[in-house]
Image 1 (cartoon, rainbow, N blue to C red):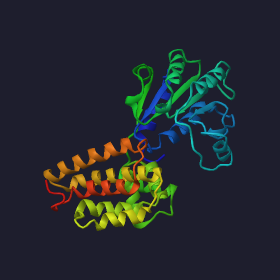
Image 2 (cartoon, rainbow, N blue to C red; image 1 turned 90 degrees about the vertical axis):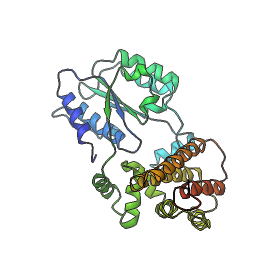
Image 3 (cartoon, rainbow, N blue to C red; image 1 turned 120 degrees about the vertical axis):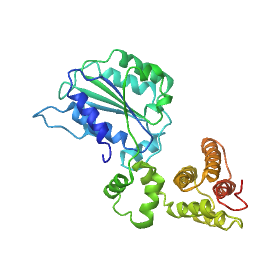
Image 4 (cartoon, rainbow, N blue to C red; image 1 turned 180 degrees about the vertical axis):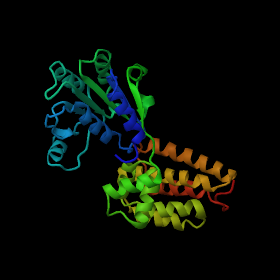
Length: 318
């Protein structure tokens, strides 16, 4: 919960007011800690003086909707506390299931919270069902919609909620957050994670878990030095292995984009133009990668070439 003092101040000021709005959109890029904020804020909201309160994940008055496990095997992994694959969307049946519970009174106090993580993942039918609750909320019920891309939410949803925006953390707060969450991260690995995270601790931790620090360093060299003899691109392929999985390739594309963003402030106007062009091409690849069956070796070569095009070499000359 480091680095979101402004969001907490807005939330607590609203709680202290006479009429707190029933719908909240927690908006900001993925990995900023919005879901953790939602759970902690919900716990504050439903608590009652003198009444023992369970942890948010076990609280009867805090309902969390998120994509379900993709199949029975993945559900078993979830129940065993292991990582598991999820479905793409939050279904209309999940929304209706919570709505049936909202016709009763809260269990431990006068308020309850419904967290949707993330609202970007709602099916069309689920959005329409949710709108009914947002239009006529049950007494004492508050909705917290975590969203990574607020523009994907229907205007009718946005108009019924107060938007609470979350901003990227500064470097010092990133370092504190990672020291708390992953104290084993030190030295160059920590520096690379902070840079790759772009102000989002969750993104930095995912980067660190995939052990892409070496890739970050090579990509930074590609941007700075170019790669006229393809040597750096060869090293990049060696680091990632012959058959990196799709999740790793997607992470690599995000790392490449972050390397370009980090280089922007250190370049002249001509180099910035090359960075913008390379970033646009990487963004296009990132949009295609989840569905296209790219050959990993060719994709890595393309990524490396785009990064090298930024450098002041004949390969990267305008």
